[in-house]
Length: 135
Image (cartoon, rainbow, N blue to C red; front, top):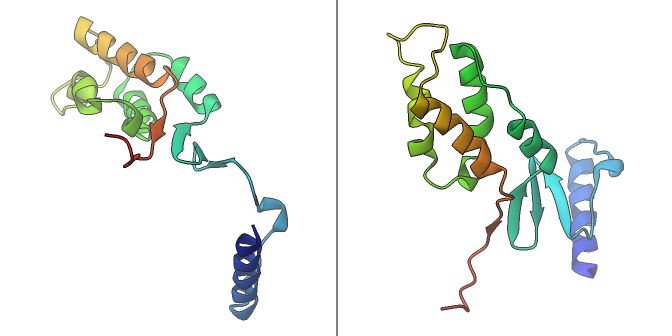
């Protein structure tokens, strides 16, 4: 713990030397988990923030290409938590091709892909660091 505080002190000195300011209210020291860029990061694991996952779970089916791009961008941010993301998103990205109409026509495969992506992310995914001591 002492090393952590020494590192913070030298960081603060570096800020002063560079004439930068920081907000102490935004410091999180000696925390088991922190919220960072839409993730909860803890000792050896990372997972999406529950509020963001809930937003995706209740996301309505897009009606046009712009809305579909927004959905794919949102869920694509968490693609690391969805195994085989590209194969699930394939039917949706096909709907964005140039020859397709601006208003979306949902078929069976695209509807299933939309729901599968949402469901896979909503199963409380967690990524863990590799434990080299285990076989």
